[in-house]
Image (cartoon, rainbow, N blue to C red; front, side, top):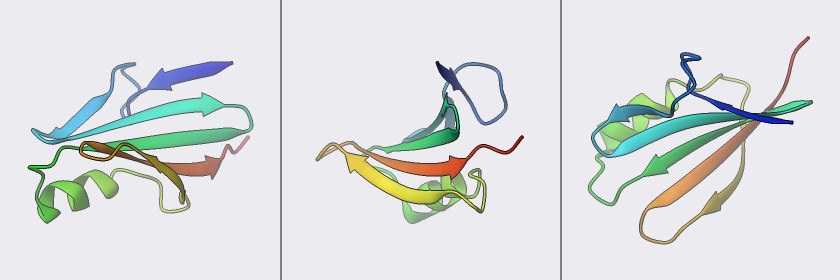
Length: 78
C-alpha cells in the first residue's frame, strides 16, 4: 500500500517555497521523500526543503530534466 502525505502529515504535498515542493510516500517497509525543484529555485529554496527531510534519508534516484524530482528513501521504523 502506498500513502502520500506531506512532511506535516496533512495529506497534501508541502510547498516549502514558491519553487520547491516536498512530498512523502509510504511503501512498507520504506518511506520515499520527493523534492520537486522548479528551474527558478534558489540554493536557499532547495536547502530549506532538504532540511525538512529526515537526516537518515538516502538519495535513491531522480526524475525529470527541467523540473526535477529528487527521491530520498528511508527505512520505516516500527
